[in-house]
Amino acid sequence: MKRKPNFKFNWKYALGEIVLIFIGISLAMGFDNWSQNKREREQLEGYLETIRKNVVSDTASIAETDSRYKSFHELALNHLNMAIHDEYSEETLLGSLQILAEQYVVIDQSGFEALKSSGFIKDLQGTTLEDALFAYYTSYSKTLLEENSLNNFIENMEVELYNSSSKEVVHVLKWTSAKQLGLELEEEAQMNSALRWFFTEPHLLGIIQRYADEDSPRYELMLSNAKELISQIDLELKN
Image (cartoon, rainbow, N blue to C red):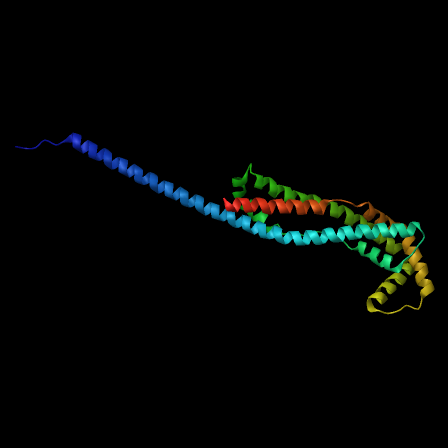
């Protein structure tokens, strides 16, 4: 006597196999997703760690530039004060001539540019860290615009200064070189005349006045934004 196939049993067995296969596929997909998310998180953290190193290094350059900027502001005020009182100091003029040097703050944007290129910056959308990132790098862009404006003004006035009277310029340049070498100049009368000319020369006074009027907190703002960005990166890396 032949046994009839137990279709009910086979159906339950097949269903169980399907469920097991589905569970296996789901677990595999879940593991793949977890692995992918883990890799992406590690990459994002790598970019953030690079940015943090960049910003920590930036702060030294920003602080140095801020100190020099404030020093130039004080030198300009001192120069104007002496010119108003008809006083002419060699040391003051030597300090004032430092203002003619161009000044730009330099920061390392490589980490931030790499983060933007990677596409992982989308993972930070709507976060305080995203705000801190753009606040810092936007403040740098604005600072660069202000620096370009100031340096272009100084450069244009400097050209006019050196073209206005070559005799006085030569005397002051000789005096400056002699001071650096520890030498004494014999042309005291000529030097005094050149000194007076420099203190009252319109183009130099224009540069000095521009720096005296400069009182921007741009470097302080960059330092504040840098500190906040470092803090936000530290919080993100702890998560």
